[in-house]
Image (cartoon, rainbow, N blue to C red):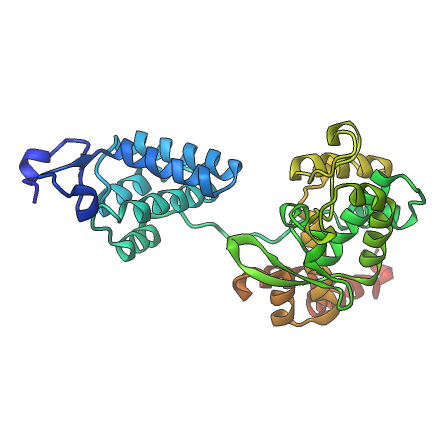
Length: 339
């Protein structure tokens, strides 16, 4: 046990894991070392984007708490000192920091429940926001894709990809990660690993399946030249100079988003007014509007709670629309002599 008076103000944490301290009377790691170790694990197990985000989060954490030992009090201190931070940003940083604490628990005693309570008490809370998007713009892009007559492989890919987004609710990263073998062509569905490493069933529409099949037929020769099982190949791949001659290379989210923006311009839609997540908003809104079933919509959207799905219900509240029309519009139009 380290004397607290001797360690006061020191940037160190005592290791308690017997395997790491075997043969040593006392070994210490400071917070910077723990962060470096944890980020190395993140780099090897998570995406480059996640590593970059976590690195920024933990740099901010270390700066605000001045590399204090990893205790509940230190975490609370971070929450208080970051109180001016955007709630979404603080929540993202907290995820990275709690991940650090969980990693560090192999060395020291960590009370995760206390961290959760501290976050509830001192963390900033995000106000509920309705998903606002340009429905008309999305529908113009859909109409453009449906009417696109082409035999060019990149045209067919972009059409299939956009229809996949709006008819499945997949996030762009999830769609890019699909393999040909993921799809059950008879049932029109796929089992995917989505956000939060959760497994889920995603359904594909008839028009979406037709578009994908037309795209795959066009690139059949290229796929056959790889010598690999077709089921192992990416569903959507790069085309053009970036792909390389005769190669099948999966396309990344950034590259696919650029291709979608190009199609939006061709459809007469300003890409500045549309976000990639708007295609998912469109999907969830369409499901709820046609079913008025919150639980079914939650499952289709793969939301973790109905609270998240309920935000879309506010966009399709026909009852309120009718009451408003009766109370306001008709009341004003029924007395033309007062105009």
